[in-house]
Length: 323
Ligand code: UDP
Image (tube, rainbow, N blue to C red):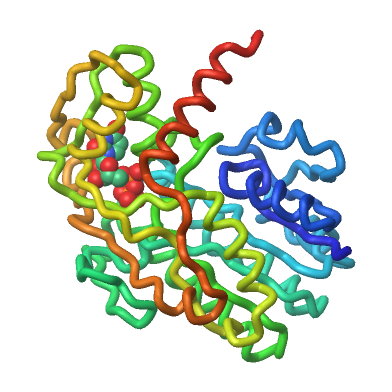
């Protein structure tokens, strides 16, 4: 039994990671400021110790890391709505917060995993983004790119700190991970579409809907995250995690409508109405998963239709809960 610290553990991916760590028999501590996470995501896990606080609080971070055997750093300002609404606060959390966590882990000799994102590849739409693929980011002063820029720096901070200290780390590059407990409130497309379809409201496809994504199940991602932190060959590297089942956003709207049996209209919303002027979308984002396959035998098991069904079940159960 190892004590694991999960920053951002009350969030969507973080809480599933807590489920998995508890099932492996570990003691789990969560540090979360509840900015986008929710205590409801952890209420079925009474053994998890919850610490309400920010990763910007250095002393608190130090206290949480001290005595831990591993750290999973997932806390971040996430979602396109959050980043565009609060660009400076998002940058602070994503840069200084990560620095605090990584430095504390190095100081106390605790191996650590840092969550990153397929966003860091920016506008590179190659068929199969490899861990060494080029990053193509838009203008430096557009807040739209600040998340990608900050996460890129986070990766360097994580890996360089590991090199300098000798404390192992791995960077987890997550590609559109979806599943139950994910909320559409901050922009993520799949829970939004499911909520819209269930409410009989228009399903809002941004742009012409031809942009493509690969959605991966959180149930594939989470075991990969823990296994990578147990794999010495992964240390000092970034590893893609996700799925290669590709779909256009218009196609996704149709799939969600079909599976929910909804009569919702599919409504195309021009980008300038959905986001601030100047917003640029990624056309396509497909991971090359061969590194994860080689390191830990990673092979996604869940298909998109099954993931959509899980999300529908989750949203229906949540609606049925007494307030
Ligand atoms: N999107 C959409 N309707 C929505 C929310 C998002 O069409 O209500 C689009 C968004 O413009 C993007 C894609 O869905 O093209 C995926 O968006 P998300 O924010 O989930 O992930 P990311 O852009 O980071 O891949």
